[in-house]
Image (cartoon, rainbow, N blue to C red; front, side, top):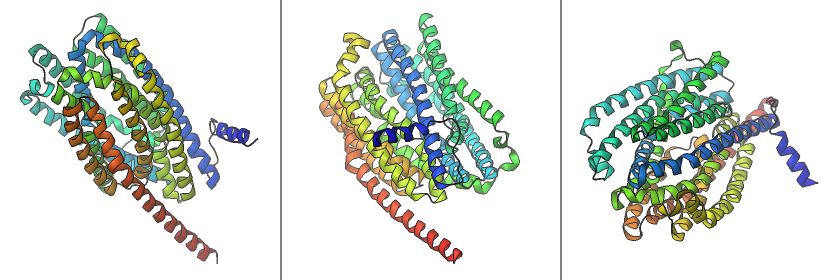
Length: 475
């Protein structure tokens, strides 16, 4: 009977109609409802993207060959490492928007949106100018670590297209950040699904026409870019009160978002140095041809982290909004639930991938790409540890615990990078993943647990003060 009641209670969260947010229970259910719909729609969008990836990766691997495919992975790693180029302003905007939403202050939401958009426009312009100046002087042959001048030529032009897409997306990213802050991330996922389908179609066309690597990159970036533009148009058409206007810009709001962003910027830098540098380390230590032997199995295990991220990332703005309202009980209950659900999902999923990994790789790639059992086990451990780190970081981000978290990430990422380089030289491609595990288990997770314990003590103290004030007012 208790199981049936639990299932019935969970199913009520998936209703279309919003809950009454005038009560604490209603706000709790509404947060869960929005998080559930966002996670479910993100899962649908990701499933379509993964299906497109499973179709496109073997095709592009076979079409490009080991060296060029490895080069493509290096290009994507370089762009991923530059993900902090918005100076963390986008993530700072999520926190600011969710706090303003917690106060039911619409004008403040638009003020934050407009101020962040102005900041990101100038960041994009500065980045585009710097890229245009630096591009002719980059030693591409050394960066890609290949000998063919033709491959270097294709890689450089492919990077130019990828870089242009990246710069354009910096101001466009405001739309998704605002939707995340308002806990409305479910709607744009449908549009992202359409973008994935467009991308797959574009890749098939380029392969059929025997296009170059640059054209493959263009086909990969066009779908997401078109989806972002359409998403922004629909958001502002349906919510006129959100439309950015110049008179809504406030230097004070811009400064607050920028200061929040700087802390997220440090976090992103640490993450980029330590946790997205694997392909670059392998390319520099073992050569570009060795990248694929790690990147492809790693993509398989990264699916676990992607699923966990989809499930718990909607909690980031929900934590922030709940804390701004003083709903501490909801924050604590939801956080520990998220940890148990993460462990319950990640452990069996990674164990299954270790078992079926060789079969999956053989089925999709044949004998051209193989992974050792040691690499698969190491990737499995990394998948579990990474999933836990994701769940923990959502609470710390939403609560604005950024300075100590940033310092921890920097130290852990440097240890990770150093360990990755040494271990890759000694044991091969498994070394980069072992470096990540060492950094997270040895430094990141223990420190984060200390920070969370201190956070709950602070929130409990603030709740007692509020309850004392209310009691005094009532008396």
